[in-house]
Length: 115
Length: 115
Image 1: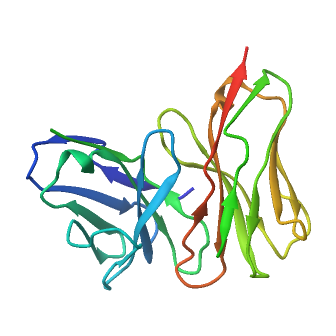
Image 2: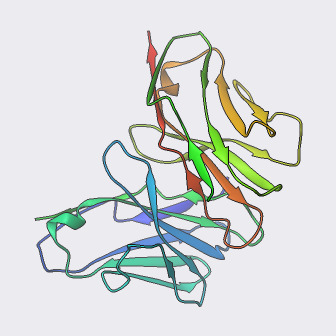
């Protein structure tokens, strides 16, 4: 099956700093990548959808200046949490799909803790 | 609006027994895809099974099968011969066959497998 790598798996940072999370499709070209946030014991909440070479589309209520998404190539998307605060602490998951494909393949997630 | 409902927050099954997880959805589309994903304690999302709405035949994958009732907008997952490794959160998801193929997830069902 298709493999999506997400890095880092865990990050701890100080309040006010920025954190970058990478999502890579290892064996296919990801025309679309998705970023989710998951609170404890809850479902995945879609934050944004990104297509290679285009600006990301953010879901309602998600601050695009807080959560910067870049999808510069067909195998890499990044999520940068800018000026992180404790309320940004959460589990972030990326996924990717290839052209014309309906299945999303997921990364292993990143646990962000902001002190 | 398209919605996915999982009415069972938690289910338990004895090892080697069979359990059925429920999922209903609401859509006005005629062509779409439905999925069941498993999220074990590692939090890695794993595709369990996929159903294409235009196919009447229920999808099966080894011990996992679905009961897809299009008219009733129901998509239940049956797990046969339950194993300890099946213990996880199970999410039902829906996507339409165009655009970005973004998923709409249900709230999840936590499955416990009793030895």
